[in-house]
Length: 159
Image 1 (cartoon, one colour):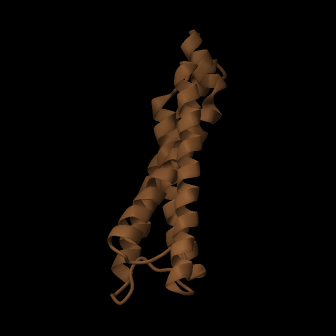
Image 2 (cartoon, helix red, strand yellow; image 1 turned 45 degrees about the vertical axis):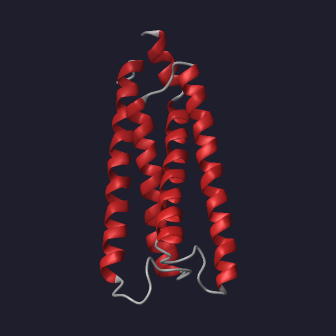
């Protein structure tokens, strides 16, 4: 087994975590920039005053940047160690991004009802598109993660 394969195997979890954190940060940034700031469709928390909505957006924005910065530091460390596994990392990116959007679309929109995608319109088409895209991202990411997990076992020689 080559040194590169040894490094990849040793850092399987870190590749996954880095991708997940950057995926979460990326889709949270898109949600914040497009739906909150540019289109003004909603705030992170819409059950109070507009001022509280803006504060909640600020907290959400900070969370997305913390996730992005942490993922970027992990990514940089993986590159430095020559341990970055693009397929596993991108699978993590899709899992993180799809997972956070599916959580938002189901738990925050439907169960907690802290905000909707858009107000004063027929919401069903927005919900379907939001949740289907999130599920596709999540499923594609999980497939990549499981596939690279099997590949790692083959590289180890345990299969």
